[in-house]
Length: 230
Ligand SMILES: Nc1ncnc2c1ncn2[C@@H]1O[C@H](COP(=O)(O)OP(=O)(O)O)[C@@H](O)[C@H]1O
Ligand SMILES: [Mg+2]
View (cartoon, rainbow, N blue to C red):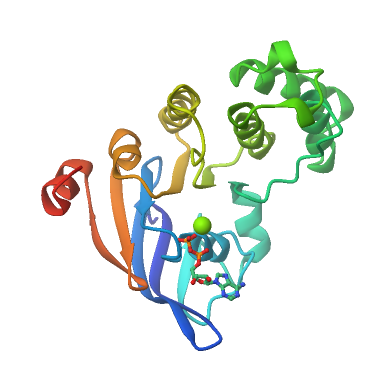
């Protein structure tokens, strides 16, 4: 049995004439945190969208939880949690209502959805504001709710697209702790970031994306010595 939660081989993606991914190769072992590090426009979101089956690749292949992202779309979707810059949060509802609704949509019973919602509110330190409309939330609260929503159904692999972009230092650290805790509980985490510091704090390995391919991959210590850490 393969011990890789995510296996990417020669993955290609073009938009019109623009080659965004030009042969991505990367393996992520089960239970590890990998940070995909690259500047704006490097193709991070495109890669996450392909791995989570939202966008089809033009070439190469990728497996998530052992399932091909093209031929095993449904199985992949059943294996992943996904959060990003496009969360399906209803702003006119409270966080509790959003979480319960997500639970019901994911097939939980009314009781299960209520229990799961209160667990997650507690975990993400949102219990006190559980009944407030999301409209009134700060960036950090909203990001924690977004993450909570992606965890309503427990999945072995979690994709996080720039989870801490735009957060203040305190919220960022709170989110890091949550991500580390998930990993300690066996969840494989694939996250993207523009910050070496964040990748360094969180990740077991860092993969640097540039020019459409992975140009370096290693532990934070290895990467810092190669990039000349800042
Ligand atoms: N649906 C799309 N249609 C056309 N171009 C796209 C589309 N999605 C992304 N791109 C382009 O692909 C490149 C990589 O984008 P993206 O994956 O969002 O990078 P990142 O997430 O690293 O900032 C950018 O030049 C972007 O404009
Ligand atoms: Mg992006």
